[in-house]
Length: 196
Image 1 (cartoon, one colour):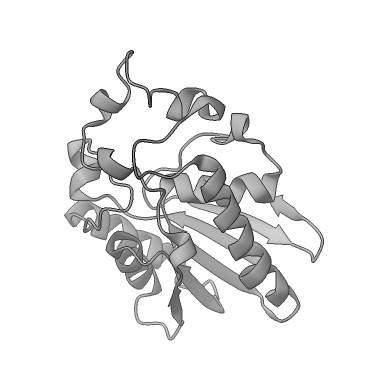
Image 2: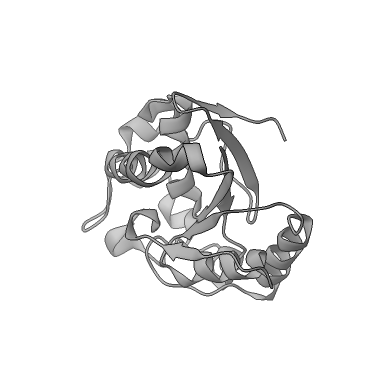
């Protein structure tokens, strides 16, 4: 079974450098264009199903990638982006300031402590692992190919499980670009990343 893991298209807040998290921010025109372009690139690739974060930026990306094809899109709460709690909507420069308690998020994720009402990276890892183990892995024998359309930090949680990374290596090869697809295969026992 093949699994395509896709990050949503660019949003207004991405372009403005704001931290999104669970804030439900729409795609901008560039984001819609990127998603449509990826949809055209994958037009001849068969997908059994597409799973999407419930947030509009991911769901709209999934719809644009699907295009005219009759592929079910299933939203799952476990695929929503990490919550940044009270800090959602602030500018990245504030988040990454030298005296910011959240500055380790990208550089030393094992030291990251979330803002009030926010979520830890370990919590993201738990729900992404559960999603893969409960929804994706059991269907491998009768499924050819599925897609997950979600978010930057969320997708890395999925990849931590599939690649066997600990929290110190949470970001692996780095944050996916908007509408970037990473491809994995599952043989019933283990996940392997495809070199695309």
